[in-house]
Length: 133
View 1 (cartoon, helix red, strand yellow):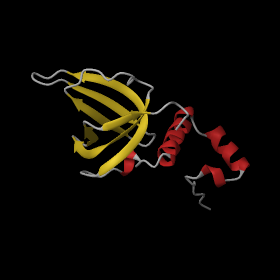
View 2: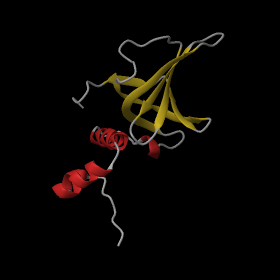
View 3: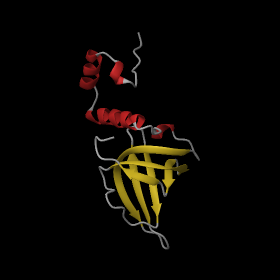
View 4: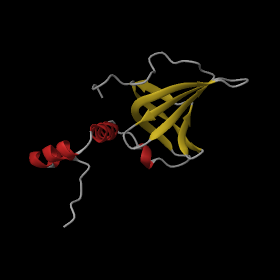
């Protein structure tokens, strides 16, 4: 008999949710929570992004990197929503106040795949207070 996991944990019985919490790793529980937050905020899950799609994504900043270029610097943020990571790239920026590992962001822009990685260049963004989303 196959048991299918539902993405909506609110409607499962309490015993099933407890069993799930006891058998999943902390990393998987955090990933599930990030995905639920993303859906609750009306964002597109990163694993569902398509090339050239206009999208709003949200997640936790995993890394911030400055890629020095000869003419234009590029600030690259790895944003993770529990399903996948996307690169947010701001051309001509060296820093963005408040954007650091652990920050929760919502970003909007056109998705392009660069070397197989979903990327949004110069996205509009909003820092979302933790747990206020």
